[in-house]
Image (cartoon, rainbow, N blue to C red; front, side, top):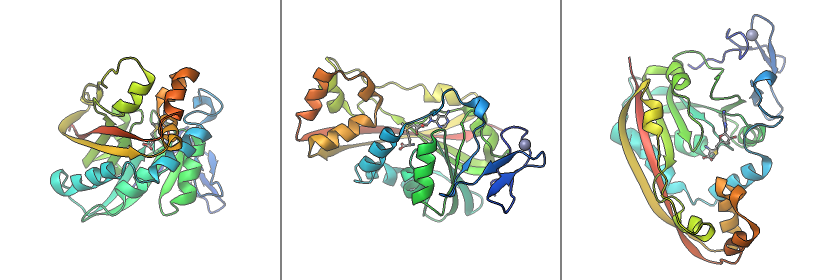
Length: 278
Ligand SMILES: C[S@@+](CC[C@H](N)C(=O)[O-])C[C@H]1O[C@@H](n2cnc3c(N)ncnc32)[C@H](O)[C@@H]1O
Ligand SMILES: [Zn+2]
């Protein structure tokens, strides 16, 4: 059972029954009407609205709900029977940098042979609000992965999809039987789209294993590669808005996107599995 802790004093938080969570030191956090809790201390915000903005969250929801990345979801779900073994069947699965919640709901729910209690966090309150509104059975809270309001050893599976990672915090909150699954771009991810924007495509490189292996042992990598057929400029623009490319695309290059009515785009992901070191 995962337990929330106060982001200020680290004591346990409990539901006060008055639409707030509170700790013994009287730090109190409102439960929003959508059901999420804001556990990001004001003094830990680097900007007024940290994380992805409303436009990016809407673009991601729009795109993911068209099912374009569902083969990745299937690859994540299949890992359970292929590679992961848990001592208990009731696990806590935690989506770190959950965005608008698509992966926590679709990839962590109904894992073969397991019953999952699903938690998700993101530093963007727009993301968490949208996740909580739609996926009411999961618990979402606003926080930073650099200071997770979660008690030690109280989660069993961490999923991080294209989000910042913090090995020490992940290790702290994972139980000994736990795993961390980190999804990151493999070399050819969105190659054809990037080629419309840049003169030369630079394949993605990753340093996930270096970042994680201070506190984790690298268990294995599964690569998930597939093509998606984009049938309109609007859909391509939505995909672009989900990526950091959007911010570096000038007007001229943007026309390469808005003039494109059909394109086949490579999706290429690495799913790295890590086990905490004793
Ligand atoms: C590329 S998006 C991925 C979102 C989601 N996992 C998905 O794949 O749809 C990266 C997410 O990380 C969040 N993020 C950025 N910095 C963060 C931090 N320090 N703590 C938690 N989330 C953070 C952003 O707000 C954004 O939602
Ligand atoms: Zn407190």
